[in-house]
Length: 61
Image (cartoon, rainbow, N blue to C red):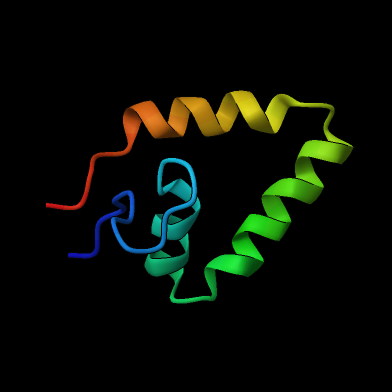
């Protein structure tokens, strides 16, 4: 079974975007660009979602 974890190797801040990229098997840069674009268009709500994800998603073990 495939599980979502924060990445230890593809991390910039907390590893959330890297973990999502590993889960969906895509380039982490695309996920980071998407998060940056969403932050601009959704007026910061994405930052709150990122912080919550950083707290909830477990580290890779």
